[in-house]
Length: 156
Image (tube, rainbow, N blue to C red; front, side):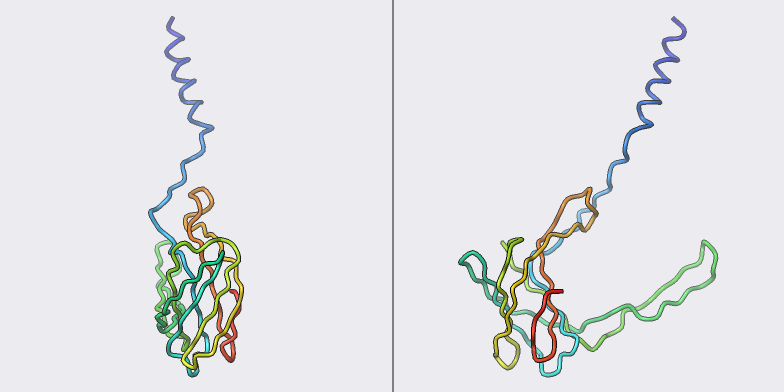
């Protein structure tokens, strides 16, 4: 009879040993839409984006903002309690994002018009992202476009 409590304790301890830890999923979201990156914005100050799929088309103005990237890193110390920091610096480019509710994860025809009004088109397939890793599910979908010389578009 005295062995039963110890046996129960041992079984309970062993039961917890093989359990996988639960994934910590934050409430972070991923906006659904199309991003636009303009590394060399000569003559570009505004953009209008048309996205068409499945017989449906939507048009959005894309607000363009100065693009930034991480600048030089500086560290204080070299030990485990050292800290490092960096600042964001302008790249000279522009970036923007068009929220496109209902954007599918299937081929979409995108046409962008810049200041000159000429259409620049590309077909892209938006994809889902996993902002918290695969254990936390998918979010999105999104597509990212890179603007080249003369306004040409390509998927990034």
